[in-house]
Length: 368
Ligand SMILES: NC(=O)c1ccc[n+]([C@@H]2O[C@H](COP(=O)([O-])OP(=O)(O)OC[C@H]3O[C@@H](n4cnc5c(N)ncnc54)[C@H](O)[C@@H]3O)[C@@H](O)[C@H]2O)c1
Ligand SMILES: [Zn+2]
Ligand SMILES: [Zn+2]
Image 1: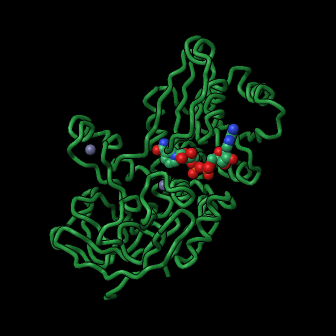
Image 2: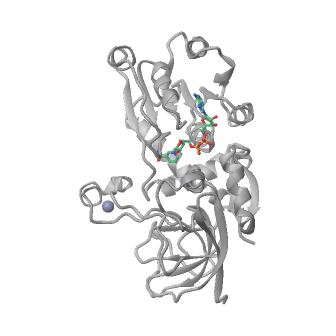
Image 3: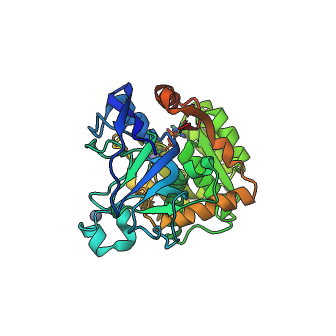
């Protein structure tokens, strides 16, 4: 077994260094995973640009997967109860703290845990191997993880963003407004919006409008099954596009809107595209990006809109995400097109540049 492992350390905003660390001993409640690859998330892009979480120096990478190389003897099953052995391919999920009010009082909503741990967003420590932008990852005691042998590496790297989309759709379903014949609008066709679109398609919803400012992304939305696509930048003002959206929705507006941009002005516009009696799921803000204004009379009261926010995912969303990815392949959705770049760990800087310049959809850092 290797004694040393390379890891890409973000030492300061905009600057990675590939360092080598000794592989630490693995305890009876721990595992050592040989990383195969990891998707680059918008969050990594923000960390890369300006370190908003104050983590530098840090080994990032939370959308990864790899092979179990060392398995502590006390670990016999994954978080879904499946038996686990050396050589299995796994993904990790969040590590709820178990102590806070959310963990103690609402165990089905541990996504609201006040101190949730995520591999790839841990502050650096003596282990160093705490994120997937590395050759190896050390799994701590009491982690949540799942065996995902049947899925390809590209599919496995899409599980984490898929879980964000699955959770958003599960939240939307709680409103009772998402049915087979609901006319849905997805605003923002980055990885999250496209994944929401795909989840809706696998549920049998096929009347979906997609909105973005990037024609390539809209084209992919069309391939994913969006029935109409709108490029908002082609309209002089939002109201002009709104008219077009209304024409497509019997003059009413969308029955349900998923807001998947991180842009406050777009978040305000989303309310205007909901029909009377319709619903809205706000999923676009993982980081604070400013405030926006809605008109409480027109946008909320008078229309009696039912709105939900969606925050990451709980371990329960992961098995749903696996099922979704299998079904998406089954109905022929071109999910593989979401992974537009495969870049080796050594060139991680390039991977982050592609991400922050929005040149692809999902960039994968692969460990050879
Ligand atoms: N709620 C959560 O738990 C959670 C989890 C992950 C990501 N997010 C957030 O979700 C958002 C989307 O993630 P992503 O990875 O797809 O990001 P992304 O930046 O790749 O995609 C956002 C898309 O929105 C489009 N856009 C910008 N302004 C628009 C407008 N006015 N109308 C329509 N489209 C517009 C952009 O062209 C882009 O394609 C991000 O802001 C991210 O922080 C939230
Ligand atoms: Zn992510
Ligand atoms: Zn907690």
